[in-house]
Length: 412
Image 1 (cartoon, rainbow, N blue to C red):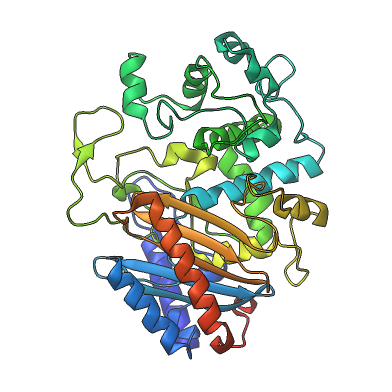
Image 2 (image 1 turned 45 degrees about the vertical axis):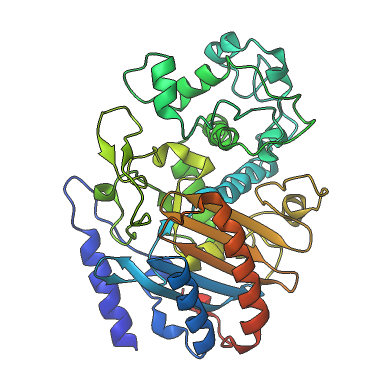
């Protein structure tokens, strides 16, 4: 087994040295040593995984199961790429599960005394107080938006004209832009729109709000969002192979999967109005531009390690105080989002969906956490997350008792 692991690691490291203009890519941490063969003895679970994939036309899927901060099971199923079997070490876009990482970063900054959740976002006394933003604001309710409002999707930001993170072409047409807007330009343009409701008085799921949280992290720290998050959040969690995604297949990371659409999915116009038609998951939208709202890639074992670092269980050292963990997971009522989590209270759930991927983190009241990420878009789109949630709960109920008693985190 040790020989097999070392050989697999060597292959991955050699792959990481290829690619013009790209710095050598070194796979470290659990992704450098974990293999599918380390998770055995749950044949019926494996069978159900394959049946689920076949039913929903999923090319590849990765599963990790953690109990009490111990990684019991980590395995890939199907294909990572055309001729490459899926491994537990492969990294994939995790879509809106990325919001959990961004939320943890905001909580860390609050612990460091660099911001408060009650801080205003815009205006002369706000964090993003640049004159160009303040001048763009016509609806004075923007000055009421707090950091917590963004975290809970209660900012008043509306998607009635479409989600600005996925309507780049329309924004370019309307504002006569020759290039896709960067974060600063997009923010300035969006601030000219009226809010959909009073901040804190309702809720509407909003990717743009989490992109703003990424900008807040950059403003407060004076550092690039990705670099700061890796240094202060992910690396201290033991996650050494997590990155912001790139938009096109040619720019994928060496151990990243290929993403797939359904066979009958039509080509779509490229997000930047180039005039080209592209596969939806590779250029239909600018994935990297999602930033803190949905751009991270990760393996399911490292994603489990991150969750272990923000769950209040002492077996894996937390990167946040117990006060912050409780604030993130407190049940604030039926119509409230958590701080980064979709569902809170006894059960914590974070889902994500993009063209080419679907992801779920499902932590049950017994402390067991199931994480599934796939590399295939389903024709149901975001509604498919409900199916994945139901399937994950069924697998937990059926197979929790047969999982091997081991801790794969001991590999690192």
